[in-house]
Image 1 (tube, rainbow, N blue to C red):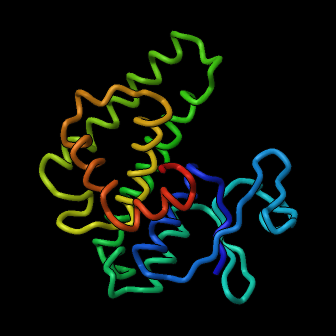
Image 2: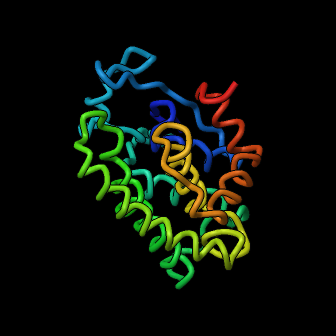
Length: 203
């Protein structure tokens, strides 16, 4: 399998999951501007959506959308328990968290990357984001991980959004001590640390 990625973007989530699962996934860098890959391929010909991540399966099929890719990767190694079995209520709970992170956190934080965002809009964006982070805070104050007692693909995705908040956007995290603890705990996981290093995000 091959994962198409841009360092530090949401493609970091399946990169972490692949490492957690011990899956042999090759990385191919995508240039954001030219849409050319490090192997000289036209990324938009492979994935017309044009954004990462995309996963090329061994049979040549291309799978897109990060929340789908992480579930696919987890299902290749069910013994790792990175995702509950398909069809169970626990799996739907996982999808519930993945969709929350994608639509409320990921998309919620996206406007903050715009340096020209008006102050008033930045304020309302942060207020909404803080409300959503508050829901994560309450969960992590009660449970070690989003799904309960064990790390899952949802935690990998959450880490990426928290990485943006802390390292790129300067979102104040003081009101969220449980999230702060979680970030530190996740950053120390070998798979997370290795993915960050391979993407050049840490020394």
